Image (cartoon, rainbow, N blue to C red; front, side, top):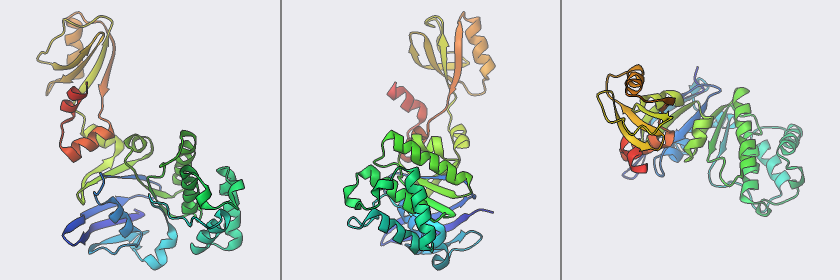
Amino acid sequence: MPILEVKNLKKYFATQKAVDDISLSIEQGQIFGLLGPNGAGKTTLIRMITGIFYPDSGSIIFDGQPFNPANDIAKIGYMPEERGLYKKMKIGEQTLYLAQLKGISKKEATGKIKEWFAKFEMESWWNKKVEDLSKGMQQKLQFVTTVLHNPKLIILDEPFSGLDPVNSNLIKDEIFNLAQQGATIIFSTHRMEQVEEICDHIILVNRGQKILDGTVHQVKQDFKEYLYRISLTGTGNDITDNEVFVIKDRSDNSLIIQKQEGKSNNEILQYLLSNGASIESFNEILPSLNDIFIRQVEGTPLARRFQEVH
């Protein structure tokens, strides 16, 4: 049973359709990527899922029941892109206060805070104020306050913002650990390489509407344009466009080709070998999520973009 189902959700502000009839389903333990350009409706969608906004129409089913903010908010951890911490308050007291707001006793919260602070090397921060921390240190603290109460659903909006590579890996490892322990994670970011590495499933929203939905693997397969990179021992200058493929790019010892419709990989290899090519490697080029994102948002064909870039 999905942990979260959103059905035909709509939210309008004056004449702007911030969320326009979006539906999605997220399984327990899934790391789910919520993608879209600025102003696409991601934040509005998240705010309805967390009970900050009420939808104009549609429904939200959380953990098998209609979403009830009064009962369900304690089961959700939300880390917004903008900082939500009290700058003048001491870090230990603030973390303890936020944990108790989620229904954890002071004794249990203190133990959990000490565990997380030790894991993230934050023990010396207890009596510091948030305003004394760097942006990256604040991000680590905000992550801890988000997951401290063991929420069933964790929503992370740009969780790696301001983090150096070491702390980015630390947070990434904890995201995987939490998912393995059964938590469901919605991960919203503009950094497509992180989505490819972390997420199981993605949706792309634009102008308030869902325009893409699927696993990372399936989405890349759906948008491939039958491009291949072929490394040769020679220059391959004698290879030209033909009935099997067309050449998209050529360098000293390699070709980028696009397979003609209806042709097989074996036919490509047979053509190359029969024309004297000596092949070192033959690899399909799958589009990156970044390429797919741009194609869907801007309507630019991948193959054309490849030629423009190269």
